[in-house]
Length: 196
Image 1 (tube, one colour):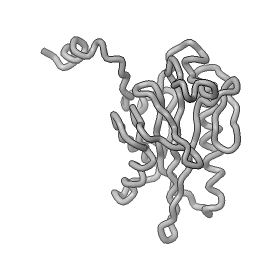
Image 2: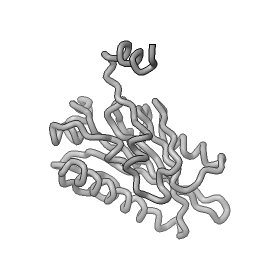
Image 3: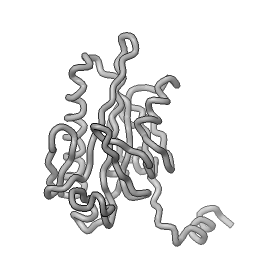
Image 4: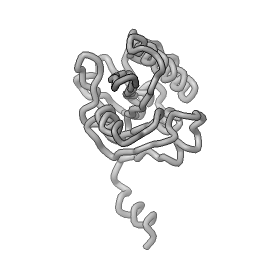
């Protein structure tokens, strides 16, 4: 029996959609970011995973994507909740050639890129809530967390991103202030296309 037939037959009732690296690579137009990609079925934190990878001689633009992130975090220790196979959670490495004091600029640039990608893919108009929240119709749909370290003269910045993409309902403790792209559009959104 072919693997594909086996998987279709035995996994038909499981509602988990995995991220496709092929779909990302087919749509990606950058020259640095996302050229090296690691996709994890599940992890505690993509930011933590990326920090652990720094000593493995990874290059700028290295990208880690999680199909399910268990302990994502935001600013001030806030928890970022993701839903398996529905949210888009990822982190990427930047090695900027400027001083640590300007790292906030990278957060803003990343947030603007998210807003533009959401608009392009879904047609939704988003707003930024300073410094790192992405808002649709008064509710949070995504956020960015920039973490930085300096090792001698080299600066490392890990940009963590979380976007509520295809959730059909928000968890009760965040439903009053959070939304997803699917809730706002009534359409399934490709996480790969949104990322690329």
